[in-house]
Image 1 (cartoon, each protein chain N blue to C red):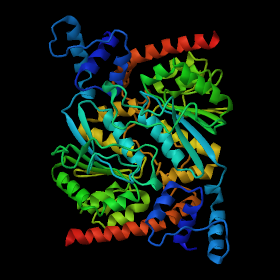
Image 2 (tube, rainbow over the protein chains, first blue to last red):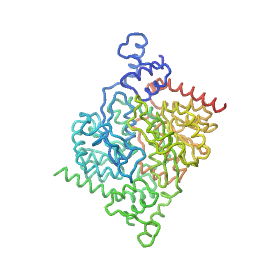
Image 3 (cartoon, each protein chain N blue to C red):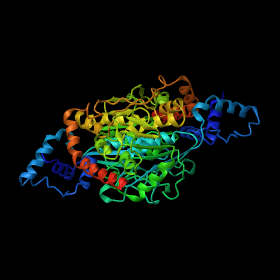
Image 4 (cartoon, rainbow over the protein chains, first blue to last red):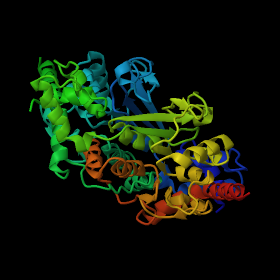
Length: 293
Length: 293
């Protein structure tokens, strides 16, 4: 098997891992292969290669919409996005009310990497495979009371194959009425607010309940993404993405949860989050009231 | 201890965890506290709180420069950036030749999230605390032969307190002559190219050799960042950042290294990377020759 030819083929297929495309861009003799004609021995060989790895490359087109908003936390978005971009045969949309850049709207909160939406609520495809919401404060609280955002999520949530979030994104899903009676998780200090929204707060890195898939805080986005890929494609496909992203974590310390961090560290963050936690709970209570009313 | 007052104080100090600032922005009665006068009992109480958590909040101003470039891998940058942004009292610069947006220069490689530099090679501060290089192909190979980039890194590398990278960023550091005789790591399939650059390839999630700190592929950026925070500040500080980012990873599968992934998965990626790996080795050989010449 000529490896370079395989790379050409993989990248010329409509579905190709990002890196395969990039590898091809650098291959000296790269030229478009034609997977459809299969007219000669070379192409036959290429088709064999694709068949060999069909489990890791196949699957219908996936349509993924990721909500972006002012005050979101960039890593909450980029972790899952990195996983989704590693998939073949997918369209990813970054969705907001309009096409204005998100993330530098407030001089006091200027982010180093603002994000531009690729489409609007109005133009976003329907019948999504994945509807995703990242976390972030205080953006989360604002979104929990934004009728335009809540209507968009509630509508898309009716037909999306998977309704998903990372970190405090689950508070927004909850405020849109999408987690009522579902087990779900959130950022570790936001679980009390989640409870106010009718969800069943569940302490776990990734929680799957029927078609709701929610991840814990910030860095849980990679765990979440891989779990979702296993559901959308298959387990070996998710393992290929895991190796592609070399997701073999080795935290230098064991302080990633309030139970394992030194008491002083947990106390420090509890002190710091006290105000925002109280505001989250009050916002969640108002949201619940609206949903009932 | 009045928690809301503590939040106000933490956020009014020049150094504040990002979330503390955001929490304050949402606190109803938020108003600027004045840490310097300490004229009344309230302010005395605030100062006590800062002293209580001095280990988690103190430290001199850190100046961090992160190279960005066309063809970089976004998560390689955003992982460490997320950790660095969690620090108090730091300036972070995204550095490139000019101020043009990086990441949408080639229609065939349009990224969903392009990144705008905040400063140029020429205007970048000297005597950095951290010089950082992310990975990415084929951008990595192009940077390994770009005289302007290599000169910038070689110059800053002479005086930077820590010279660092994630993923294939170490190939660029190596091409700039900064890893000769140093233990270092890279993306799992790029270790052979790293060897060509005079580095001592070391299979480890994060490798520290004197002031060189290199991380493994893509997702290693969080492990790398926390390790570096422990060096720059202290271990408890790093643990506070770890809890802040809820870095308590639970990969759903054990496929994050070529040794633990299913054989078919490793073979698939080896096939796909064959071309780029060969190109990396050849580029590394040319770089080594130039460094000797």
